[in-house]
Amino acid sequence: MSPDHRPASWFRRALWLCLESAALVCVAAVLGLAANALSPVGLDLFGTPPWVYTEGAMLSLEEAEEAYYSGAIFVDARTEEDYSSGHVAGALHVDAYTQDAELVIFERLGHLPMDVPIVTYCDDLACGSSVHLAKELVAFGFADVAVLEPGWSAWVEAALPMSEGAPDPGSLDPEAF
Amino acid sequence: MVDGLTLPLTQLAVVFAVLALAHWISRAWRRGTALFGDDVPLLVSRLAVGGVFAAAACFKIMDPGKFGESIHNFHIVPDRVALFIAVVLPYVELLAGCALLLGVRSRAGALVASGLLVVFTAAVLAAIARGIDVECGCMGKFDTARTNWTKVVENGALLLVALHVLVLGPGRLALGELLARLRAPSSSVQPDPAAEPAD
Picture 1 (cartoon, rainbow over the protein chains, first blue to last red):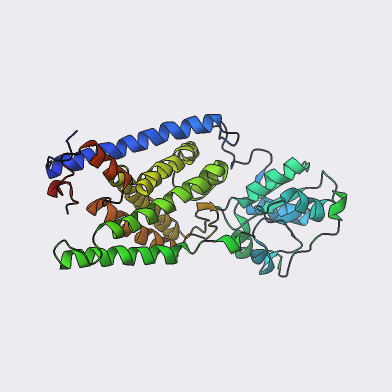
Picture 2 (cartoon, each protein chain N blue to C red):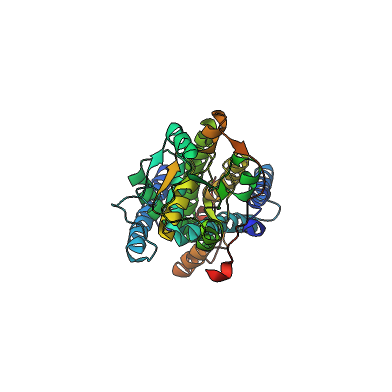
């Protein structure tokens, strides 16, 4: 707008700067939407978001307690450190964001029948790793995978069965995978 | 697993903020002539903020699903909006980062970066206030740090560095300035006071 050698007023320069910034954001938005449409890892903007769990049930604490006492397998989706410092008694451990989740699931849950009821959990209402892991388990082939929605913090608050200690590395030979 | 790769972002951000502040203060002290001139400190500030934004953008672009999940975990915006943010925001960061790195439209880049940093900090503060324990997702999988006060300090420091560029301009060691000089050879013969960064 204004040539470099002519001093523009403070107001005009600020306005121009805002316009330039708005243009930058608009170009970025177009670029982002175009890249998303072309990308193999693009998101479906009008479908169900990938973090919503539609493959199974979201359990309340009461429902999860009932499942626990009727023999459901609990799987902790948090980090190994979190698991070791306290977890649902008898729960197995699979870090939801581990590199080869499929292999770890095979090692630690591969001995279970595919229709065994499974409940995953992470920290609290806000954490997403329980849903992430539940999706991995369904993709692996388990048919009945639910998520404990309020998570570990609600379990602790209700003083339900807990234990401590490092996770069992699993008994199945990864070579057989 | 990625622990070894976790970047000491907070420490770096604070160092760059101290450098920017030192330049700013020395400049005010000596009435416009800073100890090392204006160009090198402004270049350092541009590269620092630009580098952080461009890198953060790349990590997010690699895995938009994970980034969307991070936004969702903050529980601030509805899912539909989170999807759009996950797709668009990394590219806003990328363009702002590139503008700062190259020195083309750097003030616009700095303004956008400052705006984003204010929004990010507000989101982190809201998470802290509500006691939500979330992974911030700020640098994709290379920053699995939980949102806490460290993140607020880091953002505050980066904001200071971005404002340094926003207020004082890109300096002469910038592609945009060079191009402007080439386009207007007559005005570049003698130093033009109007083209100097004004505050």
